[in-house]
Length: 406
Image 1 (cartoon, rainbow, N blue to C red):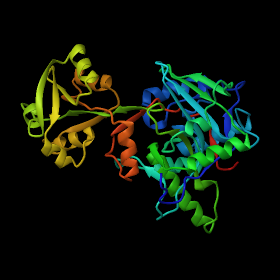
Image 2: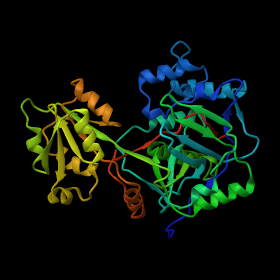
Image 3: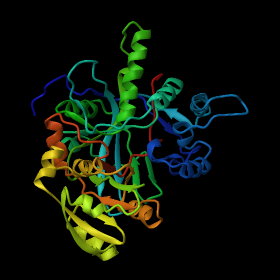
Image 4: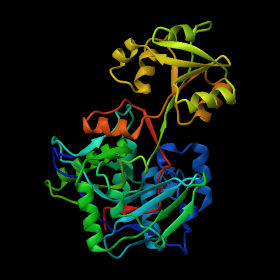
């Protein structure tokens, strides 16, 4: 693939990892901060006094007068001081494998990915547009801890990259199952020749950001601050902790992000409103059989009032949306509805649960985009609409940390 800008920079770093004798890895890892509910946060925090969630989603110390960021920084330093976290003796890369309950594997490598220079074209490509979201929380946490606590997820467009870091049957340094039954394994790679081969592979093609856009933008803001303070001097703030996975059907599980809506006026006929943009075909009662058949047929569908409907986009809808992504097609419809609330749901079960409880009036079940579509959009340097893709499983926070002070 032709490079159009500076190549992706990918470097080893001295990782901070939990000491198995003080903090068994299965008790201290946690999901990424942005998919943890308040109830789940309590669950992980009670699992072990050094669980990663305590620094990734800290709470203020009201009695001691410390804000949540100072709490996180103090904990992070304490864990290093008492040996709960120990630095590797030399810079390393960290092959990382996730295996779901069906045996499907996602194998990548964790390292430090260079941030592109401001105002320059780069081969680090954002994958989706993002919804407005305060970045001050992650920025304050980065300022306080001076550490990348969880990796962003990048997809390399270099075909064959996996072969450069596949750990085969070597014994992992960390091995644990999460609450969903996904197995997480981490290896430590300190061989100089192997590290150089991986870095060259990553540099060979653009990297598409799959997950962690806000952390990525936060890291860029932090770098700008630090450069201003240091007269533009380079430093560890020029890179961000990243899991790099090859953009390949064999490595990725891409799910859709569905929509539920509520707050429509009483008596509003949603199926009639849909008919302006879609051929609406009633598929049957919204039971397991019907929904299963729609899913198996890879259908865009609507569930409301106890019935399921197949939605077949009209040519005019494609023209209005400007592309063939379900997220864009449904956005056209939603923009024409009366005032309502739309909520993003990461699974069909979650969407249908909201429908069954009365929290939602209707659910739009979208089809996942394909790896080929992701690659085509990235090659054209286009960003998909917000909340188009959901990559799973999610890498765990706590497998390895990156301190900017090491």
